[in-house]
Amino acid sequence: MSLFNTILEKLGMIKDKAVEVLTGQKAVAAEAPAEATVSAAPEVPAPVVEVDVVAVCEELAKKNPQKLNWKTSIVDLMKLLGIDPSLANRKQLAEELGCPKELIGGDYSQMNIWLHKAVMKKLAENGGKVPQELLD
Image 1: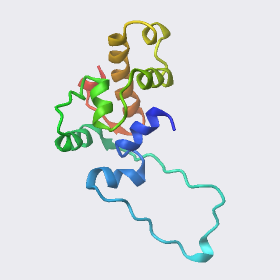
Image 2: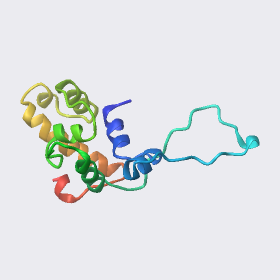
Image 3: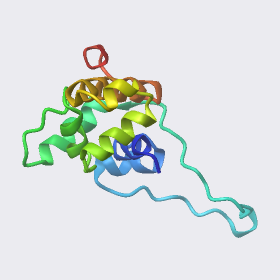
Image 4: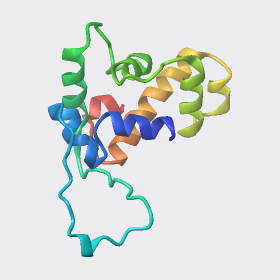
């Protein structure tokens, strides 16, 4: 699984995970009648139409003992979501999202700034409700 997909999952932007992130309880699927079972391929969860990214992150921040500046820091956002914010993972995420090569191999503070903005933009493109101030 890509790191960005992990971010989507952790934010509950996949239907099965949305209920769990917001309520702390796993979603329970309804049982299909035996004669209706016709699935050879595993079911892929569909993205949620819209998830309030700020609300989910603020709820996670309340439960986190650290004061994380997730609104501007990709490292803190990854920590908040329980994702290892190592340089290797940030480089991998930057490559996934199309970061310019000179930022990946150069000034990591510039890569981090670019990466945070790119993640917020991609979240918005994938059904996340992200306020404009986090997109600029």
